[in-house]
Image (cartoon, rainbow over all chains, first blue to last red; front, side, top):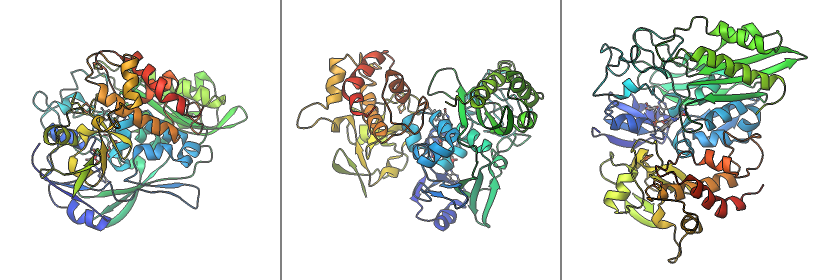
Length: 329
Length: 168
Ligand SMILES: Cc1cc2nc3c(=O)[nH]c(=O)nc-3n(C[C@H](O)[C@H](O)[C@H](O)COP(=O)(O)OP(=O)(O)OC[C@H]3O[C@@H](n4cnc5c(N)ncnc54)[C@H](O)[C@@H]3O)c2cc1C
Ligand code: FES
Ligand code: FES
């Protein structure tokens, strides 16, 4: 690890003052950044500890929730309002990492965690455009079981690894950001980028911008929702495919729904095509599979991940089957 | 500024690069806490910070300045093993013992989580009280690997000591 200075920020303005300097990085729980620094992938010369900023979860007058960026993953998953009104989010968090890591990880850090592509991590042995722009991508023709099937580019086929972010994509969350030019808010689904020819940029945030909070809009049918994760072992493994879904029924028709997939793209994937295919229609297994097929029509599988579209379809059908028959968990 | 480790104030390292794990093992010579992977993947380095289980390998020691850290060395009271330590002996909760300090600290943290109602990915009802069944313990302890495969004994030890205290 290259040497660095460490400072705790007591307030946002102080964090920004230090965080906008070249070579500075914000530090959440450190569960991703410390690892990346040890591997030599990240080399900040100054860490600004932002875990003391915005650590509260506030009820909004409209029935939504304002979640501070410093809130730990466990604290968010165990919050009564999240368990009752946004169970999809609680389950997504609980599906991720381990209890120890969830106790350390913050909301801000979870959003900005970097890919788990093996070649991104292999500093000495592999080419990676995300780690070193222009060097090439060894995942395209390599071991790419965990890689993207949607929205990838010739430059990068990495996936975003977060479970929590899949739920946030489905829940129409908003991200609040503070920066040297002032504060701004953006839809969560606009935060992460597709790789294009700049896979080194995971998000649309400018250097020095600080995530201060994530806001959840109220969702009347948010309680009829869940998150399911498919992986190579039953726990403590990243998703091959995951699905977050919420459904509102009107008789035997689907009145409204939200769907997002994890493990399929460079960003958490809001499934707008599948939603459109199902909204107002019947809740049948065939309709669920057809909707997934519509979402994955443009999928470009690689050597090892051709199973993903079909697995995503079956996962969606299983989850929606349960949610539309009232068998939620 | 200092960290409080097993009740004793100790200085934080001058070099911010030092992990809490290395600080415990190399500077304080508390070698009970183990280094398995040094990248968050095994749980051998689990310690308790104010009762919450964390991974000391991914923790920068400076970030825990002013906090109360408990390692496996801090669990015995007046020369008597913590009940969970005794249960690990009783139920063969280990073979080589390398993962054991992490397993024990993790299980103590898990008990506190279950007591206060933290659900797990397996919970059918996210708002219900937790019953620490074998399956629940497996899920909640999945952050601690055991290369010797002593899992059955580990779960037996946890069930014998911790599980009964959590309301059904
Ligand atoms: C073994 C292992 C298994 C894992 N398994 C899973 C899994 O199954 N599912 C899953 O979703 N995750 C998994 N994770 C990843 C884990 O969820 C992330 O490491 C964690 O959420 C990151 O949060 P943090 O607070 O520790 O971030 P840090 O490591 O502190 O920071 C991560 C990044 O975010 C930036 N940052 C932090 N806070 C802010 C802020 N407020 N504003 C702007 N930038 C900020 C940092 O500069 C850094 O670039 C796993 C991790 C490990 C080590
Ligand atoms: S040494 Fe910390 S998790 Fe393996
Ligand atoms: S007892 Fe040997 S690793 Fe667990």
